Image 1 (spheres, rainbow, N blue to C red):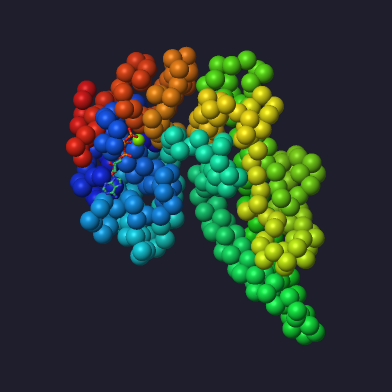
Image 2: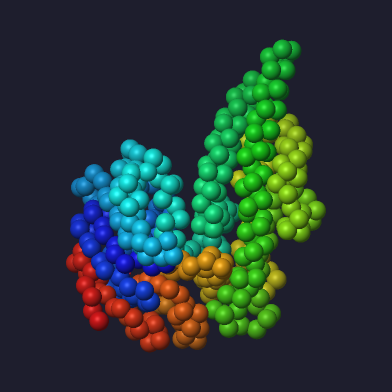
Length: 385
Ligand SMILES: Nc1ncnc2c1ncn2[C@@H]1O[C@H](COP(=O)(O)OP(=O)(O)OP(=O)(O)O)[C@@H](O)[C@H]1O
Ligand SMILES: [Mg+2]
């Protein structure tokens, strides 16, 4: 699929912007702080309902304005689709598909699919496990939008169960009937957490297994390194004996639900002591490796950078398998790479249906990626050739 038009109103530094885009490569260049990343951030938001830079919507609305509007016309296998989002920080956002309002923002997921790589992605390798869980969950939603509901369900149950654990812990002296009632309430929440967590866990485990060969291939392609530098990943569940579930093709959601219940029962006492939920998908880790060593804490800056880029390229390869290409977005990637890596990356992405590239220095972008060129400056975007 590709975007044919992007229009923004009061988004970040843009008052009013309307941009015609074509398939193939488009490069956006301009000095630091002129609005290149703002542009691709808007595209990413239209696809994922979230920014890759901030967790809340307020910074996305232009200073002094009280709402922002994002629009993209998308052409793909389904014909043409107009996706629109109105950001109202502090109030509900509104979305429309082909001008028809939809009740929930997540109803537009899938209309535009993107894979965005940005410098912030270094956190995928160097950051907390939560960064990698979010990466997996977002990719899961991109592969199948129904996972947005699965994820929301789990978050809701987790929040309620955690609140209950906290209050139960505070009443640790409960006796007799009160204690029995608390126990049976907790049992019910264990069952709910296991039921909500199992499909999320199953989805993540299958996704990590499907992504692994793409990651290895992408890392090799980007690093151009010998096999000794090979990268890898493995999903470690906080609730499972991971060896028992090593063949993910055979993993069944029902078996995971049972395993989650068992794990919850085993940690009940310490959960009550600490007032936190100790097992479940929210405590899992996606382990990343370079050359057989854990990437976090061992990989060099360059290796970490290549690995985070490889994670996005692997996502792109996975998402295009048997389906139309998502839009590939590379924010500020070329400046960080040496010439060899730049050229290999260029070859890798040149065949994508649509690639949006930002660069402060246009000469950093290899010539084979010549396409539409835009300059970004003074709050506007102009076609340069
Ligand atoms: N809500 C907002 N209202 C007004 N201006 C904003 C808002 N959010 C960000 N900006 C401005 O947008 C600019 C940053 O834009 P952006 O991150 O797109 O720059 P860039 O072109 O990608 O720069 P670099 O080359 O350094 O990555 C900053 O000057 C910032 O002050
Ligand atoms: Mg930028």
